[in-house]
Length: 236
Image (cartoon, rainbow, N blue to C red; front, side):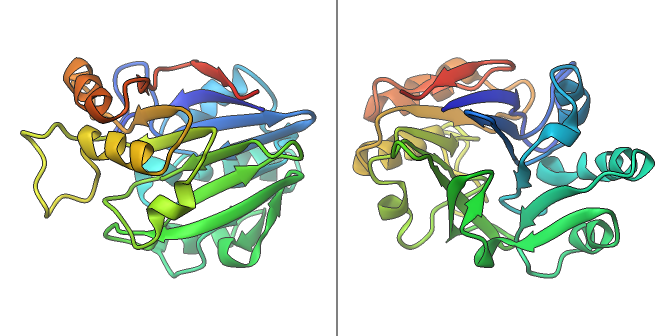
């Protein structure tokens, strides 16, 4: 199983970058986790989006979901269908997408995507949002927190993950309890407490001090590493 970073910016894309999007490959499976601003052209440079097994959404904030709108034109113009698994709670963007040519399925009622076991767990965020877990036939596990600042049971949901992809938007100096994202230090602590094998920190605002974010994550989890465009992580 492999994960390729298609985008990792928070809120809006950095120059020549993209917001959240992660391409998971396992055998013939090609699965996207989130589909934020700037992800579509990067994906099209790599493959035909019609060849995706599915897209799985953590939540409906624009920086995680907005490129679904131009993707809808692509699949309609080419008379295609594409499976989309997403939170069922009402959101304006979800309503727009529901009217397009996706095979829209509820995240809560879907236990499989592209032949991978799919699980979800609610996290704390201003809109309904979910951490996502993918498990392949060999028992390898990816957990993606999406946007989160905690959530009851999240540590257990992440336990023993082969790769934890975690929101780490703020330094300690920036973070306060009213913010909707983890600090990098909290991401490191989550990975440590969940006994994750590897930690990728992500969701950096353009211009963020990634060196400091990484340093603070590594204080709790020394092998943490930052997301970057086109980074591919092998999970063996």
